Image (tube, rainbow, N blue to C red; front, side, top):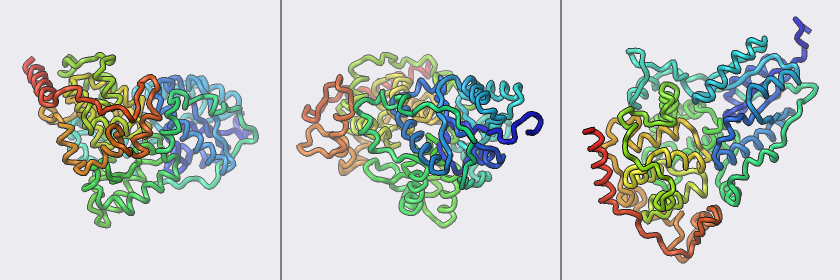
Length: 478
């Protein structure tokens, strides 16, 4: 014992959205301390607001991480409640003298973590936070005049030549304590309950865990990155990395994606720079959320705060949009892909967001909320920025003229109709399993079946576009 601290006092590795062992500075520091390590995940009170699909996907990730830790002779300790109280309880139960974690950047997590760090330090407990879920800490990227970046391209130019932290190997062993504290059983959390009958449908489309994520990245670097620029906008083609769900839960680090992409670019892969720009696009979303946290709940541009979007979520038109029954096949295919897989192709995300906020003149918050419910790759910063970028209220230089025509976009990006056939069953005498899966996953209360007639368009595209442009023009004049 030294200064009243037991020689075998453990340290806590507080796991959040970093469900990985490699590239994890918090875990590395905990192991390097030489003390026994307690891997702890806390389902915090703010996690209670997670939507059905992200809550379900979190459960899959935790189950996988627990199994991996067990193979290393360790365990995953699960607790539920306010994070500060849970940590204090664990410190008292175990005699732990330090807590290590990877930083989060949303305003609620920052406020919580600041309080926790201050409280623990006041109680003589070491509290250490580390970078790991971003390439660059948001406060380190500034314009020449010292402010934040508000447009992506200058942000990209500012960071593309920066050094990115190197990769960290996963520890070969994680020292275990002599006694383990009690842990909740994951199944008692019922993280899949809100998915109801859709859970097994969604699970079939998830690739869970750090090993799967790294395999996915390897496959993409070897077979996909060279044609990424050409194929990434084609929703029927497997032309992207598919890593969004793994990145969202920290099963892979952005540093690993960056370094592998940079290696590919150095070797002449044509699409590598575009891939790196997409990694930095996520970084830009966090930059905006950190400096202007209102982007999560209010229009980012002040002049859009009073724009006359409809905020009525309980309309037949909004329900049709959620159900993928707008009568426009690109929109409908995308919304069904979302419900079946928990993901949506990025080009399709722009189409459905434009249709809702512009043709339907419905508030982007309604779409943002639905995505929060349905996405297994839900990420607060990326989701908010994506919706506002398309709606026109966010960080885009020319939103006024961009009203995507879903039929024109379908002709351009799905000319052979493969994407729509993959996800829309009505009118197809022999629809594929992917299209039928929607009816197995969607709520029974919707009373939908593959045998129903194709839905009629809920609005006229030309009239909807003209109405949107008129509303935008009037806002600018006001």
